[in-house]
Image 1 (cartoon, rainbow, N blue to C red):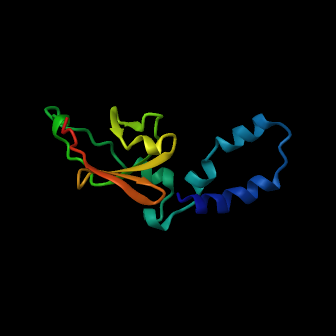
Image 2 (image 1 turned 45 degrees about the vertical axis):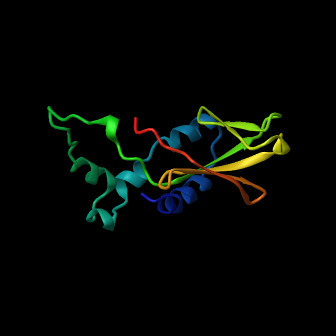
Image 3 (image 1 turned 90 degrees about the horizontal axis):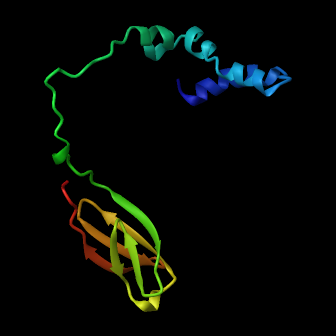
Length: 139
């Protein structure tokens, strides 16, 4: 159930009541019976969430199923890191040390790892400071 639907039905009932002890409120919050067992959802074929889940079966992998985890494709994305440059003008990222120069010591750099282009972009104050190729390990 979407959080908006849940909050729209649940919050007014919850805020109308006065709970003397926190434990009573915790017990009430742990009971999702109203939302799951009484509210009929049109998206679920006019069934409640509980009835819909009962109709689903757990699917299992075949007995001889083998997943080759050594050759998974790498997702195309840009991963952003923020690093502080050391006093020697270097920073460490993913176990590797990169040099940007002692003139940038103790400043912060934004490092963008582009997995599609396999490159590393190092930014400082919004400008590209360095661009390096970054070969990704396939293992």
